[in-house]
Length: 64
Image 1 (tube, rainbow, N blue to C red):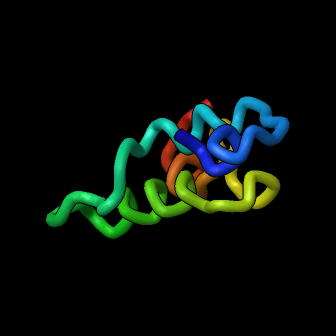
Image 2: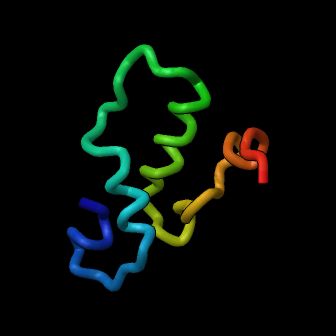
C-alpha cells in the first residue's frame, strides 16, 4: 500500500504504480534495468513517482 494511502492523504493513479512492485525488498538476481524500474515505482513522494510509460527502458525499446 502506498505511503499516501497509509497516511490517509489524497492520491491519484500513482498509487497503482507503487502497487506494481509488491513488498520490498526487491528480489535478487534481477537485471539492472528491471531493478531500476522497480525502484522508480517505490519513490515515496508521489509527485516524483512515475506514471505510465515513463521509464527510459520503455522509451528506448518500444516501437510505435
